[in-house]
Image (cartoon, rainbow, N blue to C red; front, top):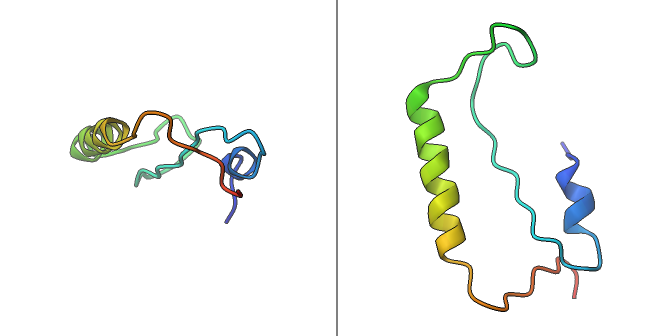
Length: 63
């Protein structure tokens, strides 16, 4: 299923974008729940991913 991130990925300017899903229950309700370890692991994933981006990386999806 597509998300709003798709529009960025297909833009010709090479806008850096990423979608990381997090497992949770009762999305969009007042009792939305998530496991703390999952949140911490997503934070680590984002951090490590950002560390691996090389200078002058071309983010264009279509070249």
